Amino acid sequence: MYLRFLKVIFLILSIVAMHGCANRGTPSGGEEDKEPPLITKTVPENFTTNFKGKEIRIYFNEFIKINNLQKQLIISPPMDVDPTITPLSAASKYIKIIINDTLEDNTTYAFNFGQSIVDNNEENPYDYYKYVFSTGDYIDSLSVKGLIVDAEKLQPDTFVSVMLYELDSTYTDSTVYKQKPKYITNTLDSVTTFSIDNIKAGNYKLIALKDENGNFTYQQKSDKIGFFEGVINVPSDTTYTLKLFKEELDFDIKRSKQIAGQKIAFGYEGNATNMTIEQLGELPEGFEKRITKDKTKDTLYYWYKPKIELDSAQFVITNKTFTDTLNHKFREIERDSLVIRAEQSGTLNFRDDFTLEGTIPFTKINTQYISILDQDSLRVPYTTSFDTLKNSYSFKFDKTESNKYIIQLLPNALEDFFGNVNDTLNFSLRTKTFADYTNIRVKLENAVYPVIVQLTDEQGEVKYEQFATEPRLFDFKNINPNKYYIRVVYDTNGNQKWDSGNYLLQLQPERVSYAKGLIDGRAGWDYPEEVFTLD
Image (cartoon, rainbow, N blue to C red; front, side, top):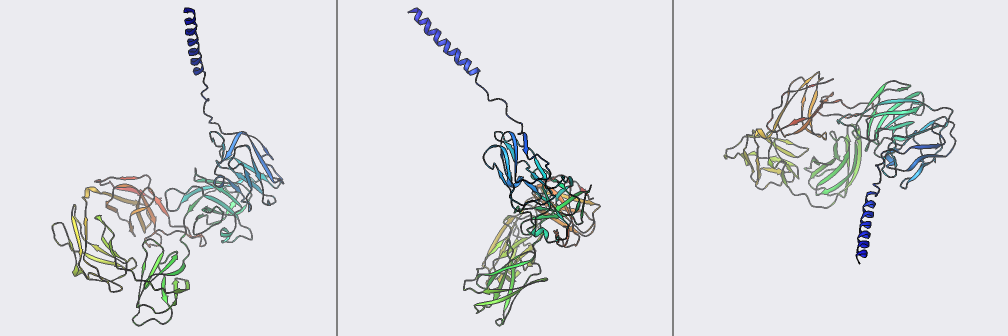
């Protein structure tokens, strides 16, 4: 029995020992694979000349897959019929390219895969692999290099197409709207520089596109464009800088739509500053009209009285050299009701005026029925101004720290286009202390006037701006605490806004300069003078 007990003990110890050994011997899976796949061969060989085939194979030392091919792969020159490339989702040890297009004679083609080729397990990329072949006797080896910047923003877009159009007998300024370029490259998502390689000697037009549709042609409505004004003579040692900008759309009018009684909406594209709307035919006695603009949409509203007893009418739309005639069908629907809203609520900044907006155009204001009282019930003097297009009244008055203001409008203070008047309206707003805001002073050196000095947030949105036609200090007082960039617009035409460029006119956008670094505008701080030296 004792012997049997020893055997049991021995068996248990043996099992424990074996278990421990098994644990110590469990494989860890090895070190993480950080190496990209390697190419073992290509058929035909890379940089082949006198290429006549329809199929290319690129072999690797391990299983690979292709990611985001649509964005990453750039074929130069572009093909009218896209090649078939596999694998797209499955893993494989080779890439197969089937050429479906008719290749041009004596032309060098380059397939740049960007970062689309990765190994199957860890997705280590084979960076910027390029397969090149020529249908002629030699490989073209010249290049054009440069830099992409944004004309307005601090950082340019990613995935910008940079293109060369051959200046042959068929080229016109409108070619970029209709035809693919001779050569192309892409900045992808990592750099803002570009190099268009494997091109032949010649004269070219250099274009950059933020090509939203991926069709290698310029679509004004969706794409940004940049261009070099002159001719690119290849070979060239010049490094070219292209400024991307969004063109202002060519003016065009959309169809009219009756959206309320005696109110017609006219949608448009482009700049409507000089747009006029005139109804043709005989108009009722005492006819009046007003035009206002939608706050967010590119739409003008045409208000009229009295009611027009017609089924339809024609309207002539003009805007500088633009003229068009629209047929409009009237509808029997109710008129809008007058609603008056304050643009501000809660807190009123020292820099801002109090503003009222209405859903129907205002025609009269009676300031005898309007009062502004502070927290001590003392009357505060004010002045008013009216913006016809925005249909808004602004009330300007001096404001003090930590004060409360009650703006009251008694009945009949405001009257609209249809004779409606307001009921009693009360608006209550407060001011903060000066210590709740920040002050920034900007001094420009080497500036060419007129200029617009702007403070933008980190996303490039303009928060504050000042215009000047001659040298002075730019004091931004009592502004909201935030981090700001200083941006200067060279307002060449003095119209107090940044003007974009125009490709067909070969007009570059107005120049914009950014000061280096962010200003950390903290509450209660008066920042020392920020000196911005312009080039």
